[in-house]
Image 1 (tube, helix red, strand yellow):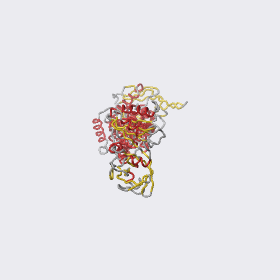
Image 2 (spheres, rainbow over the protein chains, first blue to last red; image 1 turned 90 degrees about the vertical axis):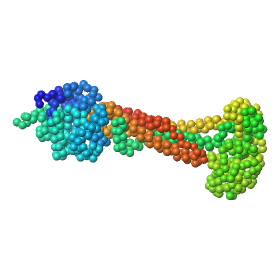
Image 3 (cartoon, rainbow over the protein chains, first blue to last red; image 1 turned 120 degrees about the vertical axis):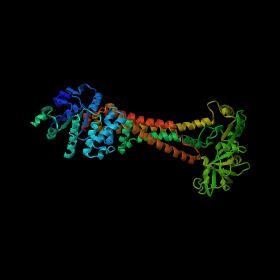
Image 4 (cartoon, helix red, strand yellow; image 1 turned 90 degrees about the horizontal axis):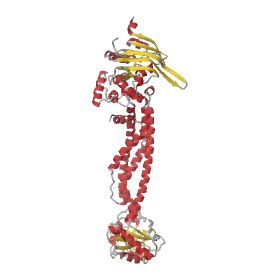
Length: 236
Length: 402
């Protein structure tokens, strides 16, 4: 694992929000280095800056200070439209609230990220069908999100995150809206993706979930990294 | 194409509020389309009201040209001598004196006042041609029919005639207290004057009304259509001399059918301009409605915008999605307007045909329909520009937080 390439590198990254005269330091001098194929958890209580961290890692946001490398590319210097292409191609998002587009069918939802990358319709359909079969929803392609259970919706979201075959899967509290049993299924899915070689970054407030499944756990508090825990050390 | 499909899907889920904002575009397009479809019918209806038909007849009247009852002015009347003089002009084929009088009709012990139009002996066919009249019942007047009349369409109807009893051919009625026989009832003309008119031989009317040599209207038939303008000038010159007036001070009017058609066209043009202005205003209102509903939609779908940005949508993707959606919204209003406009045009034409007794056809202007389609899409799209720009500029983090 040590030979693997670093895919995400945050160097002394800070994100400040200005509210009138107050500066809110959501993230304040964070160093995170994630290698390809790792299962990483970013953990912390609410207000610890983990969501901001996730937005920065997923290139949804740009830092106030510091640099972020995604696949050796400095994203802090990219234009908005280049950022969109980059995140569309390299990062697959999974959200706590699933965030599927309600007016589109399951299959169309999975096709959408490929549309933004300019894939042909045939290609989009083929990949979407393949992915939905993979997450066990091959018989639900024409359904609309509100016709599915939460677990099923999250599986659609997983399929969608894989649409452009990204290197990184970014999951923000992926089990937060699910019962324990369905939550476990989703985690298992993420783990199997990790085994296939995907880098998985999971943001969670649940220490047990983080410790049980992640290779490395970054614990955040007040916008700083409080502790980095590696799994091999956990076993000692 | 993807955007279009996406737009339709989004629009399908919209509430009634969004559709109501389309009323403006709908009304605007419907107004224009129905107006254009009605076109011919509307013109026929107006022309019918003024009784203009033949294109080779010049109408000469004393006083200014008025659309009120002819002969009601207090100027020096035209006379039979004027008619004879006009007839001698080389470009003139013939000239027919016509008199129009208000007369008292009595039937079924009820009295009605109406217009009596004189028929000059020997020019029966010409008069009938000028007015384009045909008998619906009985026949028209022919040589030797003294003390006989033809009545307008309304008198053949129990209610419209005003006598509470329909008059049939061969019945006797009183005109100015003298007995006349009805030889025929006319086909419907749609003009309120013509459908209540009484056609009577000039000699009979002269005897009743005692107008002597006075003539209300002279109908002049020109030898050929190209001579109309020349004949008009000749007649004007002649009458100026005979009535001793200078150029510009004429106390008579020589109206060519073109001039009358021009007047009608300008009336029609006014009506059309009015409707077009209304259409224009409602389209602007519609566009504002679309801006409004799209802006609301951007706010409502902020999260969706965030999601799409998170999964790789560029600003231009978001912009085009809202832009196209707005255009499609306008297009839907336009399509509804076109359908409704055509419907109004068709029904209106049928209505006018029944009313006037004409057989005009609705005009379907495909170029206009296609322009309306493109136009309504563009109205929507243009109205959507600002909201779409707002949507595209959303910060993904903030949008997702919703």
